[in-house]
Length: 231
Image (cartoon, rainbow, N blue to C red; front, side, top):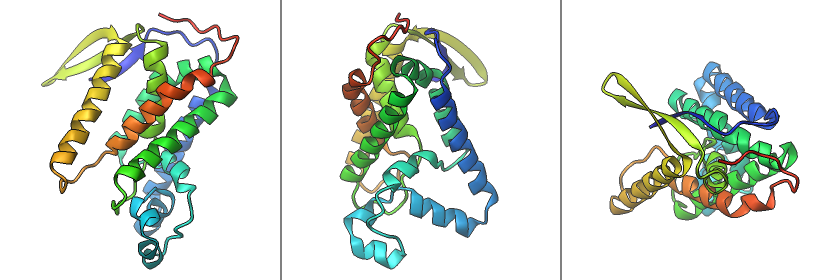
């Protein structure tokens, strides 16, 4: 299911959301055009490599500073491929503007980065031996989804369901769409637990950690005079 739009109007311009999207795109394109060895170095230096913080000797041998914890934040602006960044941009475009509207620009960026940090920490905690970089805005976006889930559960989300080559469009409540998204994360984590040696391309713990952080923390960031429309 691919979300197309939601039914909640945005009462202010989401400058922070737009800025986050621009930074992600610029970083992605810059890494595409730079030499492979340089892009790989950036990926490991600014992406969050869990084993780097678990085993200092590994970090030392690999030439990475083990005490560089900013990677828990910088990793949020690095993406590993076209589909990775495109899906994250779509989710940001549809859901983040309403949460920024709800909180205001300053509070939203703090909320976004805090959820991203906690999401990345959750991924480190549950996969401390992982030797590949964890990158992408998904964890922070999951925090936005957690806030949206509880603040706008009955908003309508238009989704695209491709059946073979025929696109079908449905309008469903946000609580159903985001609830399905959470179930998918739980299913993937369960599968990964059953097949411990299986390779994975997504940081499922980061997604769930970010969603939980957003669901728990969003109420502390809402503007007291918020006039956001709810459905």
